[in-house]
Length: 587
Image (tube, rainbow, N blue to C red; front, side, top):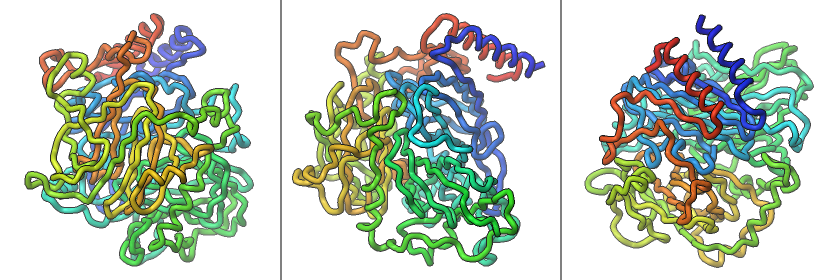
């Protein structure tokens, strides 16, 4: 009966939605399940009973509606890493923009994947929960009228890699709260599964591993995401080249690699042709990078690439990782070599290189320095420019809308100061339609991945040492890649340029979960002083209230979003959520 009812809904959808703004609907139940990816039973966070979660599949300019049900025992928010939420930071799913979804409640996210294509992922953004799962891939397909700059692959293969602990996210939180570092992970997962038993000493018997089935002679697009906690990984497929074609929504100049470093929070797409002899299966490897490999040998994920005509299992040693562990100057050649395919069309029919970022005058510069964690008021904290961010009680933009005073400060320093670190709610007061230069100076001891919600930034330069104004002479002002997550090597800097055309409040953070949890983040507040409803959407009808605005929250927190536009679509969405609630008992 329920399936029949949903079929009628789908038919109604095709009638009511116009051809140029289709909707796709998802229902996500986040709950705990027991799994043993590394051979030790543990509680992980599943989406609809699956670990990792299901793919969100849409096409450029589609409207995506995801009804998230919190069946955990703690608050929840879901964020959609890399989705720019044009004019709509209300859907971003971090504490600076949204109140949390309480246990046994739900919230419906609705956003348009406006002018985007590519490979992204989603995950829970609160309280270290990603360390227990809740993540899954996002694929935004190109419109048929816009050709991709390579032959259509024979298939898509989604690969989620990441370091993993057998301790729960709550236990890992407690470790950090006690002032301790997390230490070495227990392993690396590939699509939620442990390593193939390539070594009987390192890998116990009975672990379930990932097998990727392929046909000889065919070419597949591998969409690879590092959804881990804090470890940079080197990804490689034994005997096969990786042809890089896309980085977080931007087509790249096509280059072959035998292996590729993927840092925490990053996403890449590669074309891989099955051109090897099928005498055996082949290893797919994701191993810890820039560590003492003899000590970190167990932090290695291994899956199997299985040709349909394979004559035997994968055997022998793993393909060798890069040998430049102690020569990060050499390792930096990889990100420096990534170039934008300036002649290819992206989400729009105009070439990706038609935006001449290198000729625009910079209106503001921020030099943001990160240091190793320090104790502030007796607690271990991580900082940017000496400030460890304190999670807001009231989302920043809601505080603006309701004139809540004192909930944050617009005084984030534009350069490091030699003063005692402090805990505060300092955010960046960015200028709408400005063009900002941000230098990420990593004086910590480990590689960090910096991410900015709401935007793709141009990665114009990177080098070791301290950034100075003379460093600008090394910037790539012609064909650098634009993306949303970028690594910064320890003792080095990375410079990015950002065109501030997306009004809202946007999270700037490190993706390394330990540092993020300890306060290494801030927000950019971008407001149009002449706002007329065209550059920023109003809060959705189902907006949640908390903190100073808790009294505005209705008694029931079960919330369905109103659509972005269109009376027919509004009727449909209301109908879908109402029927789903009735049929499945959603609360």
